[in-house]
Length: 392
Image (cartoon, rainbow, N blue to C red):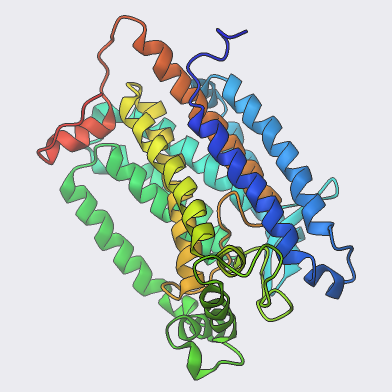
């Protein structure tokens, strides 16, 4: 029995479970009042998140056990299902706050774009690990996978879900850089991205989106409308001080701050638990990200290495965008805080991702006990070009 548990990264077992458990407590605290206003029982979101957490634990254990290389055999099927779900959302999805991001499946409200993030990470890891021998060829090695990514992003933007689309593009960029792309090809991609941004700016500059930008950077110009959420977030964060008002003692959750248990849950954490609560959450998230990057450096298999980078960057970018929104650094885009915010699809995907990362860690640990086999790690390939050396 102990032999079967050998090699797993217990930091990546304990940390996400602690974060998710902490999130469940904070979801109850943040939503216990708003649920009454919605004519729901006070424990509605609390119970739903516990249920999704149980599903997440099952997914976590399954992904811990299943060898990560097996996902290479499932890439095409996962892409097909993801595409079908994204189209299904556009035609049959539930409308919430002028967006269609979720669909009802067997009584559960599922957000396909959350699953698409993980599927595209697996796809990019698979395709760029296969293209290592000709990754220097831009049209053959780099460009084709990006066309599929762009197609998926367009479907997500149509929902609209700019936050998730941005995260996917940032993940893709990180994985492309890590795959060993040439610097001139990277520069070419940046130029293409800039041109594409110029083309889509008219679409992104609708009245609603412009209000979000104004609300993020000039909230006091319209404190009752576009700047309301950010101002209330400021009040919550500043009210907490060092030690906080105490668990359950938030004032802003009493109808002042929209999305207290979802997008703005960190503001409630700051108000109730103060700076200490913020440090704990950011510290645990940082631990997960750094452990994932460390595993990617240790992994000798290019598929596993890119997979670990993709998962780590997904958590990092999602956390950055969420924290940036509640602090006024970035516009509000509806991105949840990993493991902590209310959201079943997000929690399930994140827990499954942690299972995959643990399986990679275990594979690395077991391989280190075997005679070493030299294989190109795409990170080392990229690093050598830049004049640095990474050690495995």
